[in-house]
Length: 414
Image 1: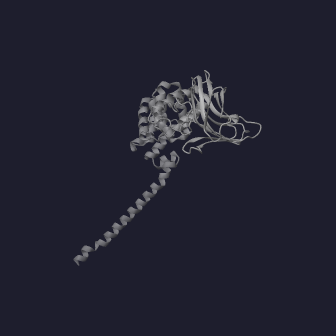
Image 2: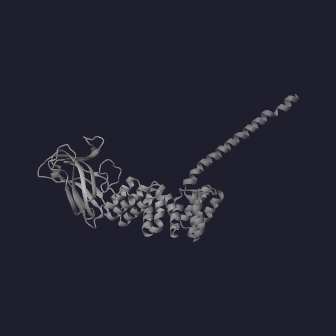
Image 3: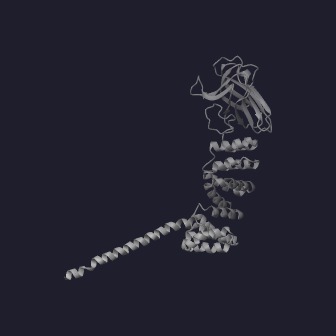
């Protein structure tokens, strides 16, 4: 009897405990469901509704602060952002809002401290970095301003034009201080580097800036690639900035100006255009650099010409100083009369005026035999760059010519 009396409350206790557990689970489920319901409201509902649903949420307070700032209610934005930071001290957006309220209240030093901290906490906070770009630029601190601009432009291609223009104006108007900073950013090889270099083609000032950057980057850990340098060269040529083009080549030695004909043996295609060979294809004209039939290890320029079509066959830019030179080349004729139907010509790049023309072969030369021809070229003063071209001499009827060229050289004629 005693045992039964002592043990009889156990089932009732277990039942009571089970009821409590059930109620706790139900309460937890309700609370969890409420949290699931209000999270989207906190994030996406209108601020007025969100603040009523969750008045103590740091997220809601920060959203309210951003809304008040956008509406120009600076004091409200400051109070709300401080309240959000008290609840979530590492909320970058709340910190940024507080910093912007300080700036709009005229307390720029305090704003600088807050927004610098926000920028350091998050490289993705665009408004903070944008304010810092402008603030540091007004103080003449190009290094800091452009560092924040770099952070922006790495993430957002849509603002590249504005940031690029900022760099270009500073590099043009205050070259001594701004150019080394821009070159330092480019030396880090950011993903926007090719786009920026390609953008420097609108004005003579842009092209001059590109030339200066090319020289500065040559001494950096990441000099311009042949592709990048070729793009700058082509932009300068298209802008008719031939003195700058010759100056860069002389400074960089890319390609070496001591070799007036670049890749004269057609074995090295790495040099950048327009100092590299450019060949042309059209109806009646086919030019290509291929292995020589007689010397397979030796590449050469092979030309097929119908003798009737007019046009360029090949060209490259040179930068000879004024004076007298001898142009020499090797030629091998498979078919036809290259001396009568083709010519190597020189013209001033700036004005296009003809300088010299050398028949591109030898009369009565033995077929399929390499031989040498040459001619004298006089470069006038004021002609800082020249086009070396293989031109056609079309006749009134077709007269096929197949010819090879190799080992082109230009040396002073003394």
